[in-house]
Length: 113
Image (cartoon, rainbow, N blue to C red):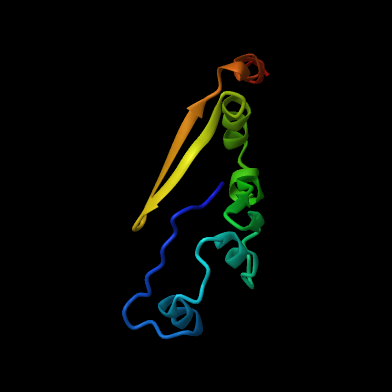
């Protein structure tokens, strides 16, 4: 996904090297992927990060990958539904989906298996 118009705010009382960089404006927030790429303990689901793009693979999360019900749902839904946008505000995450009618045949075949 692409990330645009990112802003960071240091919480009151936070005093760390990163907080200092945020307050000073020294971090280049126009390319958040470059910041994520240098995280010392990157989550396993983070596949790639560069410029304004961050690529994650939710199937790297063992609880999702190893859940047969999740796998069945994804087999049917993936051909016909894609994520259109992801937005955040405070601690709220909005995910908007978009239908892909061209994949209906593949979804039906997956549902029949």
